[in-house]
Length: 278
Figure 1 (cartoon, rainbow, N blue to C red):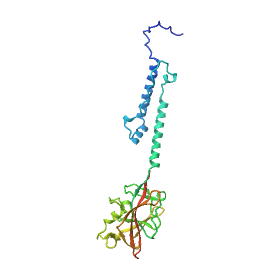
Figure 2: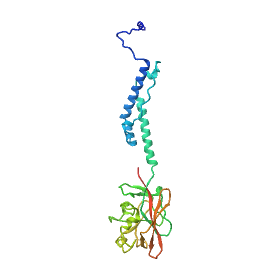
Figure 3: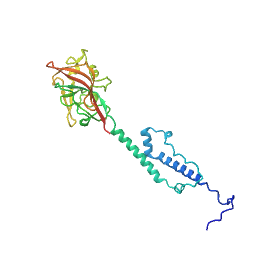
Figure 4: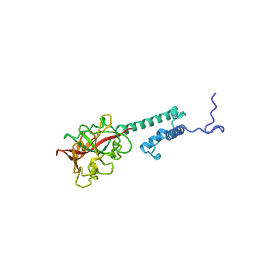
């Protein structure tokens, strides 16, 4: 049986006045927003996401706007919300999805860097490269990490110097580019011009130590001397150029070298594509 209603304007002493319908709805929404915000802040995925996008705690998403106060009773579904666990799970799922998508964009859409070594051509043909898709594993940037790199093809060779004499070329520091602070490969090679005559030849101590490097399809190295290749000298003169070889590789400086028979071949500083493995 329902309790008797008290006379108009009075309230039973044993029963405090209940909040109005509008106030109850507002309080339920505020409590829900607070619980969702606390769950989100404590979520590991949210912390990762904040670091990924460098979001400060003061930059958190604004809370949902408070609905205007009204005298009409709130919908029953709003007034009776008591369990937010499924909603918290949904928040985590959304945050995780955004995080995974951001990582996919970072890895999939990232442009490769380009690193310049000197390349010498032996047959009088053009400079050609494999492109990144058909490259090999090598630490071209000399930062201790293997990369997928584009490499010269055909009768085009990287100019190399086995600085630690271990019988192989370890990384980009044993090539001629900007890895030692020079502007490009020709400038790096010029540091070894003992007599200052503007070319590297048998009058320079390094000439007998210089090697031609070619990568086989399996990534193994093939090395040979300049003398065996019939190279007489490599000129240190160059001209700046911008010649695209494929999607990423391009020639940035062009020079020449002289063969033992007096003919000339191309020497070029080439920006080769290199991408770190994820």
